[in-house]
Every structure is written in structure tokens, then in C-alpha cells.
Image (cartoon, rainbow, N blue to C red; front, side, top):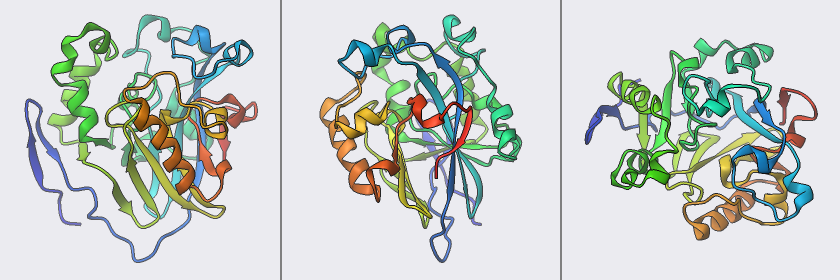
Length: 279
């Protein structure tokens, strides 16, 4: 494979920019496992802006999920889960935390086997576990990196969402050439596409992939729960409400069936397990 060309990203050094060089001659099916690294007892205690109006729904537990995709180029991980060393103190204790490598092992995969981690967005429950994947490159939308390292971080409410240890950790990944920046939709290879949707954060992205059941979509935090998808109700934490609603439309238009659009925090997905094959 021809090495990705290096481009200068202001203030961060050289990063790989060309992701779509790897091509297969035909699309192939994938399997997907959901892996729950932890769980909050309720939405209103989780610190996540509630996505539902009902007090009954807000009392339901919250799952913190990352994903394992098995496909023609080997295992790929979507998001990293969270790492106690990088998150807010209240996240470092409890929440029934299990380290991502232990969850991956239940599916027969070692964390150091992972060569590609797709990052849906930068929130701490999605992108503070990068140390668990020592041999991976992290596929990130350029708009996401620009926002969280850009001038709007002068606002404390935004800057505080990136924990202090995350910035030097990210800078190290960039300096090592372990970040692949993309700008917009991108075919990783036939049968697996990255869809830039924004909304929840400026560079939020979803993953669309072929499976034996049809086209599936991993929504990231465009949808916290199945109710978000079913009722077309946007999550309560968003950068752009219009883009968030449009992203729900796109998820449903892309997935072969509504039940193949998967939210990122619904414990019902797990059926009482910590590792669950969903398709």
C-alpha cells in the first residue's frame, strides 16, 4: 500500500490525510459487537443532557458503549471507551467499569491487534481510551479536531469538556503519525463508509456498513437510545440542532431497516450482557 501523504495541520505537526487508498474489489459483510465499558444508574445522574422528556425514561440506566467491527480487513474498533486516567474524577470510580481490552478478549480479539479506530466524536466517554490501542491509527473528522483545539476553547464551558490529560495525549498521537484526518464522507473500503453529519459535535460521524442483515448504521451520539431513532427525537446535547435532526434522517435513510440503526447509550441493546453481537 502506498504510504499516506503527510499534511501539516497548524499547531499539531504532521498527520496522515489520505484514508481512502485501501480498496477491495467487492464489498463484504461485517459482524458487529457492542461492548459496554460502564453504566450510569440513570440519565439524570449521568451528567449527559437528557434526551427524553419523560421522568420515567430519565430514570433508566445509561450504557457507555464502544463497537467492534469484524470485516474483510480484520477487526476495527469504533470509539475507545473511556480511561480512568483521562476522565473527570467522578467518572474514574464506579460505573461498573471494565477495561476495553477485557471486553475485546471476550470476542477473541486482542487490543494490540487493532490497527484502525474510528472516532465518532471527542466526548470523554468516546475518546479517552486511546492508550488501550497501542498499534492503532485513529480516524477523525478534521472539523472535530479543529473545533476542540481551536479558538472557541477560550470559552470555559467548552474547554472543560476536554480533560487536561487528553490534550497532551492527542498531541502525542499526532506527532507519532497515528491520526488520519478526513474531511467529509469517506469510503474506508467497499462496504464500510464514514458519514460526516455534525450536529452533536461539529465533526460527529456515523459508520455505515454492509452486514448479512442489510446496511447497518452506527449512529454515535446522533442517537443515545432507540427512542431517539423511533420517535425522531434529537438528543439533548448538540452543537447544531438542525444538523442533529438531519443526521437522524440520514441514519434512517441509510440503514436497510430502522432496527439496523444503532444508538450509542441504550442498555436494552446489551440484553443484560457486557459484550453483545448485534448483527
